[in-house]
Structure formats: C-alpha cells, structure tokens
Image (cartoon, rainbow, N blue to C red; front, side, top):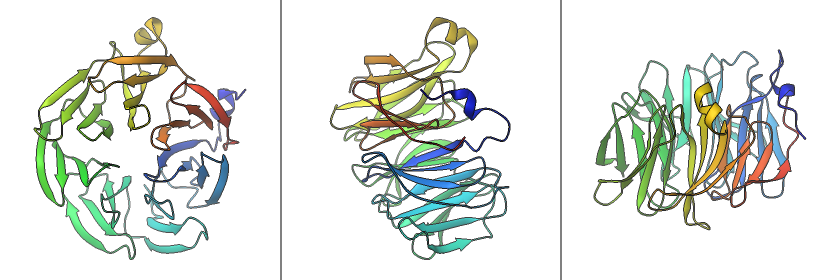
Length: 303
C-alpha cells in the first residue's frame, strides 16, 4: 500500500495539480519540481512526460478534449505553452505570460483560457497561442462536457454560451473550488460553503448540498453511467475530522440527496475525476472506481 509519508518529506516531487480530458481517459499532472506527466487511467499507463522549470512557483495544466495536446502554465517566468502529447513537441510558448493560476479549454476547444494572479484572464488560440480576448476579473473557468456552456467565475458566477451571459449567480465565498454540468444542472462548490445546483434553463436554484461544519466539496463531476454527481468532500477543520472522515467519496442524485458515501484515502492536495466520472485519481497515484470507491490501480507517482 502507498505510504503518504513518502510524499510529504522535504524535497518531494509529488503531484500538486491534476486535470482530465473531457472525451478521453487521460489525466495530466504536474509536480512540485515542475515536471509534467500524462497518464491513461483506462489502460493504466504513462503516456508521456516532460520538464518545464524546476523553479515554476506552481504549474497549471489542461488537456484538449481528445487529449492530443496539453497546455501548461507556470507562476514564475517559464510561461504558457501548448505541447503535443504524443511527440512532446512544443507547438507554441508564450514566455510573456506569468503568474498563471489556472488553464481550461473553451467549450468549442478552439481556445485555451488562462486566469492569472493580478491581471485579466486571456482566451488564447489553441493553434498559435495568440490572444483572442480578455476576461476581466476571471478567477476560475469551467466548461460543460455535454453542450456549449461555460462557467466564468468573476465577481459573480456567470453561465456563458457563445460569448453571451445567460445567467448570473451570486458568489457565496472567496474561492470557487469546482464546477460540474449535467444535462439540466450546473453545480458550483465554493470554499467553506454549500454546493449549489442551478437549473440551466431557468437559472433558478435547484438544490443545495450542505456539508457538515468544517467540511466542503473539493471536486465534483457528473457521471452519466450512474446518472449522478460524484464528489470528493474534504474536512478542513479538526472538529469535522473528529465527527467524520477527512476525505470521502459522495454520490449526489439529481435532487441533491446523498445516496452513497464512503471514506477514501486522506489526501486532498490533488484529486480529479476522469473517464466520464467513472474514475477518481489522487495525487498519490491511486485510481478509484467511483461506483464502489474501490482502488483499482496504483500508479508509480513521483515522490
């Protein structure tokens, strides 16, 4: 069994950021040392890996829906780049872009959307890296795997389709942690706040999932095969850990009711749902089957 202590000693290279492809069972991860890896969680293999900067200040990562290209951005001076997953060839690199906080793909996969510390977000052409548009105040971005909807987190949470804001919802806290779309709902999870589901047609609040005091939803995805949302709930306070698991895998049905709950490994630094929500990968390299919360594989992750 993996020993978490191996990943917390001084000098660790452990994975600190993960992202999944929307239409392929591939996951990209970046370590404290700036090294980037791409894994196939279906056939349980390492697809590719390449370095960025050992003094990255943190690496943000994303994959195109088909996982043929990946996008990497660092907080410090290395910049933002698009890399071919199979050949490891750098297609383009923007060394002028710094203080990257996150990267996502637009709904049509034509743009890489970056958000930053202290500057407006940018929509970059995926083929050239050229700036197409600015998004003032962007703090987080997500897209639906089902249709053309995008979520822009700014002063409010905005539902956007083809550049037009369809709905706006008030923020509940200082940081949005996760967002997931079903055919009818958009669920947003914020730091130290309840997860809220909004109706995509009316914009109205459909339901609220309130974690116990001292816990919140850290990651969420819609799983079509289960017809449920799957979520990772994290107890960030000691009081919450005294009354329940530190980390748990949840199933929320379409009404927001918890229909499955199972404690999983106490590791919250990096987690991501993949393969249409059927698998969960954590930063230790453990792959969970979300239907059962069983560990089905252990990757040899950097330590």
